[in-house]
Length: 249
Ligand code: PGA
Image 1: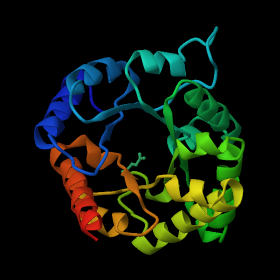
Image 2 (image 1 turned 90 degrees about the horizontal axis):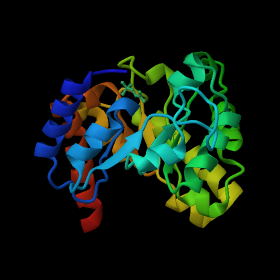
Image 3 (image 1 turned 30 degrees about the vertical axis):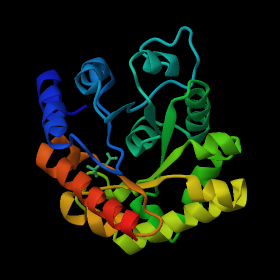
Image 4 (image 1 turned 60 degrees about the vertical axis):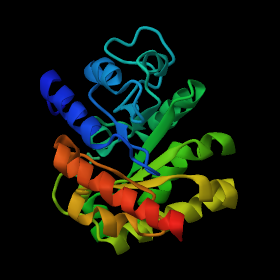
């Protein structure tokens, strides 16, 4: 719920001006729902992808104030963030709901970006692995292999979101590796290798490269740093440099 219409559109145009080509990197913009139409119109014909920050687990019906997957399709959305920690912890959203939402998204060919992450208390209590596995199992366990392949996972430690405190590249890699292992055990090795696992939590231009160069960190989910052109473009440039390097290697 950051930025009003004019600043949201100014940011979109600023990003477009600086990211005309983002070779090897998929850049996704996730504005508030009420600006999806405007941002979608601004990026039409460009390589950027439009995504929403949330949607309903229901197909349609009397759910006042909710937005369905089909409605997101009407707005040109290709992806949707599901189970962000602010929804899980601030609004009581459960993994069971996230699972239903992921199924709805797939039914409408919208790619879900499913967020998981432990609180500081859970990390300090040595429960990170167990919490992440439970969230993955309950949110994603019931998907088909094809649906899982078309799902993005975002590991977002709750203690790192909006706090300026980033997980170290080693901490991120450790959890990403455990998610990849869970995917391999549950859906098979091929699916596990194809799933994009993003890291989110105080990603900035200065730390993006060290996080993104970890073998199991495939992308970033950016909050605060996406609200300004320079910091967001800095992250995209770090990703592009790494993509170029890996294409050569
Ligand atoms: P942050 O937010 O980058 O500001 O920590 C991440 C998020 O909201 O997912």
